Length: 272
Image (cartoon, rainbow, N blue to C red):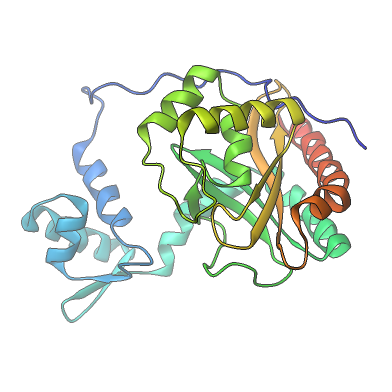
């Protein structure tokens, strides 16, 4: 089995920003709030809907929507506004600024080809994980996932790897402030129990989550670390428990997952 990266080796994150100061551009922040108000549950919105979801007045939301429309990020159809494909430029700018993921994709594609199970990579953003790369083998989730998709960190294997890479006080603070919703009967929602699980992830160098995000789903994740030893991402493999029970996944797929993570870690260090 390849050497396992130390999940505990990480740098403290920068302190959270305080109250907005002179450099804070409120109109820009409101524009982002309107963009974020669109989503799977609101792919098209009226002016009133966008104002309510973004916490703005109708007049403020109207000015922003019309500006976004002129810039090509929003289109109008009758009373409804919807995002245009140009919005994808914003996410692509992030991915293109992280060339390691272009190099990591062949590694993950080879992994999926070998094990015939899906693999993804994600980073931590606040209390959620954000998918930056996904190589599907077949559809195993009821929800559709791809780059930019978000899931709770506390009940996902990649999320636990990323949380485990944080200092203990930061881990507890994040778990304490997020609503720990039971997604299934298996979901762990007790902060102390989650902290104990994260200690195990730090010790073992990987995480395995069974049926906590979705019934029947088994996911196993390993850390991606940079040259400084900081956990900056996670890579996983996922399967249905009827086809791949947790013990079998650990026995059959863990060595191959750790090998792929080690290859990505090497690429990461070369890019730093």
